[in-house]
Image (cartoon, rainbow, N blue to C red; front, side, top):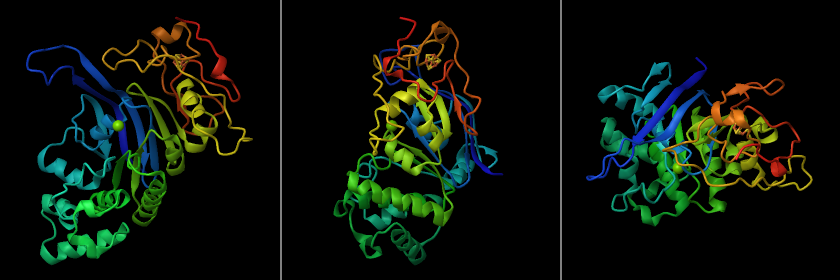
Length: 341
Ligand code: SF4
Ligand code: MG
């Protein structure tokens, strides 16, 4: 099948205060609140949203670093949401993660060659000289000097350390790589190098990426399709050009209105939309449409009815938005006033 990953109605809740010895609470954090999408082989799906919208939690549900509260995750035709033990380990070979912080995820006291060969040790594959040869191949593949096999992480620059993380993720020849803010901690000049590396590896190795970031310019550059998340839900999902050119959800419009447009005469130039208030707590998300407390277009129905993620007549294929009053091309939200308090 063309579909590598099918995420269906995934829910992830965390108990509040579960780490406290003295307080017990029945409250839960609704971190991921019914998310569905598909990821096709060889594509990059960008996942954007503000801090706390649930994108990192969703990533950890997909890679099974977290168990899920509800829904299902189907990978390569198999439901992986309830796997345990050896079966789970098997799936973990195919689904790898690259993390934001290349400093924090590398043990400073271990040599780089040994860090990159971790997956071989964990899965009991390749020994001795064969293992070393493969690690050096991986270093070369990601643009590191294989002679630096015995160096420590602090002998590498930030960009090189992220390359080490990429090499480790590639060790077991995964099919899917979930990249969680892979360039956010890097200097802008280095970001492009890592992004180009990921793109080259994708075409060379046929990789599929879920690419999480809050930087919309980066996401636009790397993605085939983009999903926008707000308070644990997908607000909008579309091909990258459809989303950036014709955002339908007021929240997508607000996010994109804050992105500087390179060409000042571009038709895409927008008035900046300033959202009122902060992102509400995921412990008590707003009723109806989660975005109604901040939405410039909100009406009474938005308070009671949760809008479905649906296509709109005339939009590009696969373009869906969860909004009762989708934004029209050219509509100016910067002066819109919500009809509710
Ligand atoms: Fe705004 Fe209503 Fe659309 Fe939600 S459903 S985004 S509150 S207009
Ligand atoms: Mg995050």
